[in-house]
Structure formats: structure tokens, C-alpha cells
Length: 409
Image 1 (tube, one colour):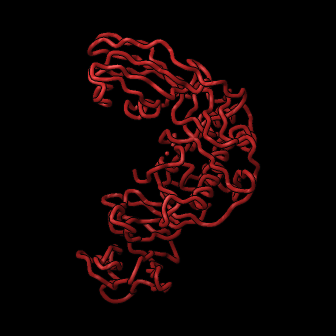
Image 2: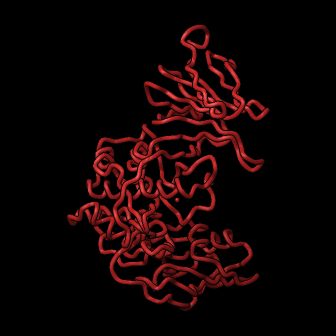
Image 3: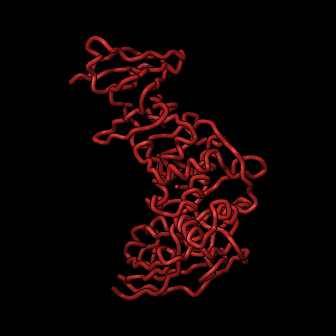
């Protein structure tokens, strides 16, 4: 789910190992400073040991399951990972960017009850049930080149049915809408909007406007294994609902509140829904976590490695987590190897890499905690990089890592 407040959309599921994190017991210590530099021979292989998967803010998905296995209820899990928040209720609708459809027309399968809504005029018209259009297999909304939306139907070839002066929306009175993007078919609750670019830097997009509950039903099975304990699934449902409610008040873009990838929360629409996660959503219907009366920024990640990280909010504090390390969590600790050449390629300004030093950590847990600042010394120059940049460039699971050794390859 969530990365820190995301800077780009289409650019933060465990069921795709994604985004939340952990919280808990002991308080953060002062940030640790530099450790001895690791000397790097030419063409070296560098062993990196690490902990956790994701940014570590808020709920740990593996930790939630670990807590559930110890008998904690969803409410206790949420209280642990979002200390200082309280339970509340939230309803409404959210607008979700369908990232696969960026820059493409909005195409849906023909079906009973299909309607076209003119978002500018506010009028709704059922598609024809007689004549050539009644034999359509698909309906499409696309830009008409003049700021409007051309609505077309397909009977082998595409035929323009009418043109809307602005943006349009597909609705269905009887069934879900099935969006067609290339060879994929995905069904969604709610409506599907086709929205024009708002600037030269943006594209035409498809947005799913859906109830908050319908949205959460499509998120939980993509964020967490459906076989997990109900307490963990319920905690995930509340966290996902709260996160969406927060984003609805603090949207990325005037056209949508959230995206459907791990840059926000992974969302698969009606096609992703599952009975076990649906049960968790139903049992927590409307429940959110509030801070000062408003939905909290309930970030989460796959695994925190045993210690949550500071997310910049009072309820996203750095705390020790006793639940994350249960035997089924294969990313609680990890080890990988990278080559010096891959580092030189990622940071070409350094030249031939000579040494790497971690100069600042967050101070929490093994090795002094998550890496904040590093120094790469090379034949061309020394580079100061953040732990986040190093992690991203090398594809590491988290910034909580230790440079164990470097050996000639």
C-alpha cells in the first residue's frame, strides 16, 4: 500500500508484497552514525543482509497475521500499529485511477442496463436496444479532438453514436461494468469515467467511481493472502478503508483520489473479490481509525523486520514489533548479493567503486536500524546517497540492511 505521501501516481499486496509496516513496544533511540567503511575490490560481489519488506510505517501485514496467530483481535492489532488513534465510522465514494488505462480510451463490454452519463450536462441516456447499436459487443469513450468525448459502439468496426461536450461516464443499472484494456477484462462496481487531460503533461484516463465499501472489497484480497486469519484480514480492511478515506480528503489529482497500484493500495475491482476477505470487509463495515477526529494516514507495508519506522505522524512512531517474526514470514530477515558493477551502473558519477560507508541510521534495532545516509567512494568522486535511493537503485527489500562483506568476483 502506501509509500510516504506519494509524489507520483502512475509512476506504494503482500499478495503482491506491498505496502504497510509495523509498530509497537520500545521507543526509538537516537540515530546511529557512521560505521567502518566496507572496502570494495574490483569486480566485487557484495553480500547484503537485511530485514523486512517495505518502508516499515504503520501496520506490518506479516505482523498482523503474526498477532492474529497469537490470538489478538483486529481491534488490538490496529491499536498496536496505530497507537493514539481511535475507532470511527466513514462512508462515501472514492475515485480510483485505473493505471492500465492511462492514455487509452475507456472501453466496456456491452450488457443489460448500460447507460452513458454526460458529466457536463448531468444527463443519462441508456444505450440503444434497437437498431445497429443493439448488436454492439463493446462501447467506447475517447477524446474527439476538440475537448469533448466521442461515444462509439463496436459491431466489428467502431461507429460513433454521439459526442459529449465534455467528459463521460459509463453506468449500469443491472450489473457491474467490465473494462477492456488490451487483452484484459476486469469487472468493477460503481461507474467508469473517461476523463480528458487537464494539461499537456497529463493524459486521458479512466477512473472508477465506487463506494468506499466496494473499493475496500477490491483491495483486501490484493493486499493480503485470503487464507490468513480473519483478525488480520479485518485489520487490513480497516487500514485500507482509513487510508482511502484519508486520500479522499487529500487527493493526488482533481480527477481522482487514489490509484490502483502499490503506489497507493493495490485494487482489483470486483474481479479480485473473495468470500473470506469479503467477510472481513462486512464485519468491519464503515470502520476507520481517527486521529483528532479525522481519518489517519494509515500506511502499511509487507514486513517491518521487527521494528516499525517513523512515518512522520504521532501514530506512525518507531516501535519494536514482537509479531512480525513468525516462522511464515520469509522476508522478516533476508540476504542478497549485488555486484560492484551494478552499483557503479546505478551511480555512474562514482566511477570505479572503492568503498561504501553507512554514515547514518535511524537507531532502531539490529545494526543501528534503517540506513538513512551512505557514502560511496570511487575513482571519480565520492557520492552521498540516501538509504532510500540505494535501496531503490539496487532493488533491495528495505532500507534496513547491513553491508556484510565484499569479495572479489
